Image 1 (cartoon, rainbow, N blue to C red):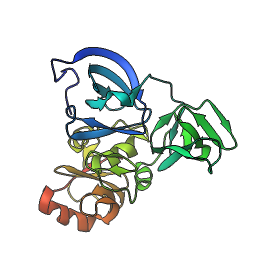
Image 2: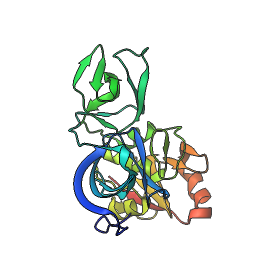
Image 3: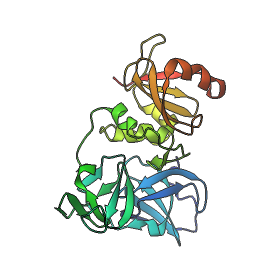
Image 4: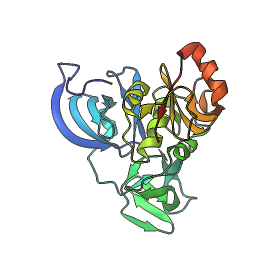
Length: 259
């Protein structure tokens, strides 16, 4: 993660201004037109630290992650009232599922509801089914259950959405939904979440398993969920099979107690 105190390009115009992501999904890049480090979702609050034409250097407020986003993806900060708690949803032109869909939103997107009618919430993006939303202060109680909403999601390096997600993005989505602060990268998660389990301690639901560059979430004594390149998707896998398989490329496994 880039140090947010250092503006990486001295030619940019430094600033400090509030904003938010105003498109359904955008990449958070290491440099303008550079590689993706993470992604930001609709409604994510940001602090705009610098601008350079078509690009802005921002800090995500949910985890302090920094990077460049396309300036056109930013909008004025609004107070969200709800967030998407279904795996994904659509915003429709009218409060009617047969009208054109205007946007697709992933789990954890934040929206501002101005009214509701016929089972739909009116938002600046369009009308969203009420059953796909929860009040913005709603807190889930089980990270593993949240992670299971992403089963079958394609693997995407640096991904943070239902359209594509990686191992640390999956863990972050699960823990943030439960009100547990969680950084965006697996090495930071290993340093900041829980305490290491002693060797031989049975795994429990919501423990974390770490390898070099990889993380998985325990769902049962011998079952874990992870976004993985082996299947190129979010899958469930027996822990007893995963540990020796992953060790071949990512080294030994360490477990973190989140109880």
